[in-house]
Length: 518
Image (cartoon, rainbow, N blue to C red; front, top):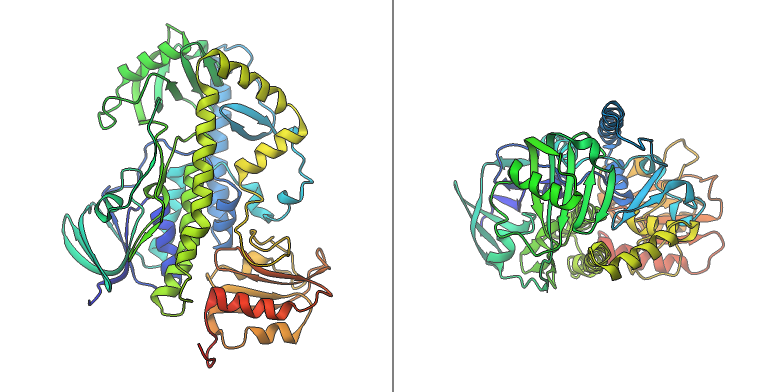
């Protein structure tokens, strides 16, 4: 089959754009098909976690995140000022935010920041409050810089997948591509047409999130609130509300969310009769439908983000899970397209990402159970609230929410293997992230070991080799870092027989060196 593009990506949200950028960085031709004609301004995720911020930092996008966070913090301050002006009671700036579990806030002042799992993100660790819309705009600009062919207003309508490629049918014609990746959301057309099974649990709740213009809000509690009829959230930006009712899924998820519907739900759940919603600026419905495909790949069709797994938004894991999918898949698919990948490389995408997706589904199911407006859940919530008043529990939950400490099950006994590589400060004045911007692998020789460097001979532009010292980690002799930032091999000074492990890791992730027998 003659291909119009190496890869077609269905869906131009943050996950699809992130994947497209990773592919374009590796000089893979990619077409993105997005049904919307403009950036989606619907209110969605409000923050990113540590692995996501590290991913953007490693690609040189940290300044844009910093600016987006500054704007978000200003909106938060505006919300506090509005409540003070309206005369709301108990208006105070909350303690440092460390996340939440089922709306139970984690206090940053109880966080044990000496925990070794928090050691490593570098400057990326200071960025988190980045709304999804801002992230999509940043990624859109990045995709344009990299020459990604983003086709807005185009809907995927059909596909014919074969052994040598995929014939994609769209609302404005068709194209032939070597691979197709569905990043088209929870109701993915690609997933349905390609026949992926999607087992899981049915929804039990109706959630609504919106940005509105309203009056009578001074009677609402700020933050998360539990009542006899459900859960509601007010803030942390002006006009933002969220309600959760536990009497089943919505009758029609596609119907427009009206001011009357939001007002009725907010009054019902909050018990505040005087609240009035005059205008809806942005609104969406959601449920706790929790499903996941067993395998993220079917031949030349793959899935990423919500197309591969859906769940409730509680805990803010969905966007981050999708960004992680894109980072994991991008370099592996690029290597496969270029014919430089080991035979089983693409299979590691499901092997590494599926367990994390399954964990997120369980994590969100547990939160729904805790939020139910009934006595047993209320009692359990009280126990958990008491636990999270301790350093140990706060640190445990914050680590889970932030994504630090997550590890792929890779060969090797070193504590760093399988983990996100720490952003080491090197003796030449650079940081580790500075050497990952081009999306290549990195072999970092910290002990000036010619034998270590020799292991990477023949990998050319697949693996960058860098020799430098690391005063902050004098016992660390070297690291092999995959393009997605994962540590594939690490060795300490004085360790024996590590070069064979390094050679095996290089072949496992980057294929056969040039000039060597396959």
